[in-house]
Length: 229
Image 1 (cartoon, rainbow, N blue to C red):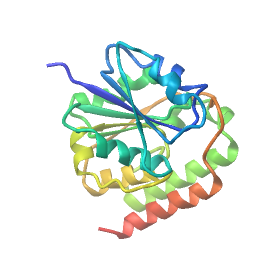
Image 2: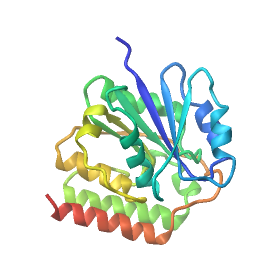
Image 3: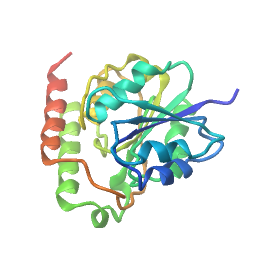
Image 4: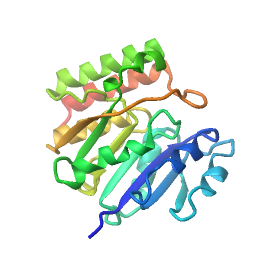
């Protein structure tokens, strides 16, 4: 029986990149794309709806603001029994959709419940990512490794894959860019199998929405979850 794959795309004003991302998703590997939009003021939704008509792109609007709220909105609106593997991918074109197969394979063959795409395995990352972002990501990843005795390699990456069993059991309540920290800590604390795979990285298309304060929010989430049962 063929396994079914769903891709989740949180978006906010990604009109210049969203079509490239959707059109590069491997076919026929992906069965459905769900675009969760944060009420973009540009043509993101309009463009997404015209992409890959044979694949089908579902568009829903998130509750509230922030990437975490987009993910929560998806979980509230879709039955997790409909697909076997779920992939979350940023829609800014920094991640290569064609590498999706590398992320879903460990789940399909039973090696993992959560797969993390590691940008730091890409040798040219420092040339493409702002220095302050690079250092901040490294420090947050080190914090996660120290606190949880499990090295995520890249805790803030925007490329993840999940089994439906993980999403059914995980408590996802992040509202903003602490979503990835929420996902990682849930996987560790509930003893799900985690696999790290190397991925490439590209220059972002469009405006970067990450702010300095988001690093503090992510750090707080990592520390808070360590002391919470």
